[in-house]
Amino acid sequence: GAAGFSAGLGDRDVAGGGPIGSLWGVGKGQRARSVVYVVDRSGSFVDWVEAIDIELKRSLGLLQEDQSFNIVFLRDNAPLIFRPRMIPADLAAKREAFAWINLHPPAGGSDLTPAVREALKHQPEILFIVTDYALLSSPVQATDLPALIDTIRDANRRGHMTVNVILMGPFARPEGNAESLRRRLKDAAGTLAPQQVSLMREQLELLETLEAIERLPRSTGGTLQYLNGDELMERLRASRPAP
Image (cartoon, rainbow, N blue to C red; front, side, top):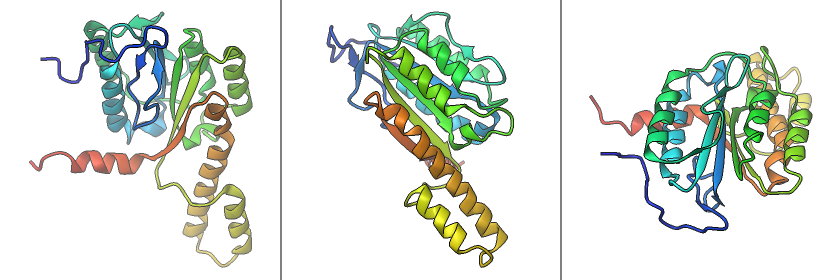
């Protein structure tokens, strides 16, 4: 059978396209004729790639034949593109996409901008970006966030595109905001164990990244969601039957 695939036309809207397959609930209720997924495939994703691939395939499987899609992986230097142009979401294309996803394990750095530029060439109505909190501070190659935001804004001058961002990290989202955590770190200087200071600095980096990048989806009516990658993997392992 073709488990995980959808081929029927279901709830269609000729003018606005059909429902899209959300990622972890992000994008639920949105409708489009065309979707592009930009997925960070850099080395920092090696521990989470299985959970990401399952969700990406589930989302692709829900697209229907009158919708089109493409996938862009950020990996090594140049972006990896599934197809040179948008492709109808029929069963054959989905099977090819699933096989293509399996071919490319995480590797390399984290500059999102070239991958997003490539995605924007296809003028999608919905753009998903899956990346991690290290995108602004990768030791290999960090993303220039103002340049990324300008790139998306320039491509979306007519307002026809919705951007959804899924930002992943290795721990739960800290409460509060970057300013309050920065103050706590300053006030507690000299009284915290080095390990605690290191963790708080990581959490501060995450909050700063979230606050910086939240402008990107908000300006297009999209959604920003933070996900704990380690927790996703724990849930995936727990869902499997014991050997």
